[in-house]
Image (cartoon, rainbow, N blue to C red; front, side, top):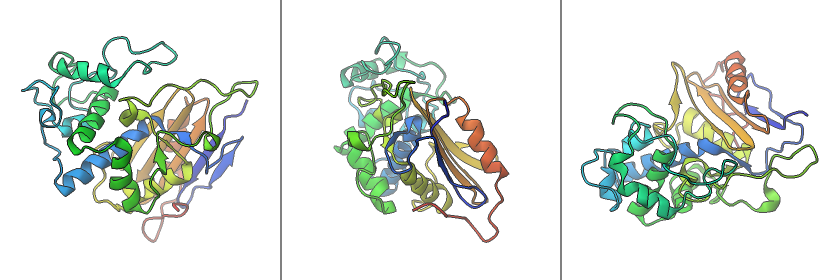
Length: 289
């Protein structure tokens, strides 16, 4: 069975939508959501609402005093928090189903005892980004969707809700089994939303990638992006979707989303990006709108 694939990129990359994929239908973007959350933080910091170095305890009353954790630590995965929420949160086939706001707040009260590593040392943490999203919504009094809309989408010329947790059912593209039936999806609408619960069309994701990494339309890229010697990137994976977004310092960029088999998405995207011919006349934004 061939994997539904959507490939969009700059010069030297041939756009391809194959095997039932659709660049204009909503797909899960998993941990690529973190880039939106980090960009919200960067925008709020620029506006003075909160700062990168604001202590977490100043945003959330449930957090014990003296943890030393700042919003920057959460955004850079250096808070020392574990990768996943502590305790049983859901069945094996839906691991975040039980991760409610009540569970999150209970975790926050024990935050100083949850550390998996030392403060300042990198430890990729979905829990950390759940805490970051909760801190940003608590500090501003706005919902996560309102923050994404006002801080990221609208300033970049996209419509409110163009990236969302709740796209219309008829506009969703989901993985299917051998009999054509939709496969069950993870529950990602609770506090874990800000770590991995958003949906977007691939065309919108390409627009965001170019605007944030190539054109730098909102200033320096958020600390959520992973960094290599010459590439910034972030991936995402859920039970049935995988995505990789990356841009080279010379202006090359790629957005690859696949349904079903996600094991090779990262390597395919990086190989394709590095094989592309660098643009000769500045950053290439083809296919970004």
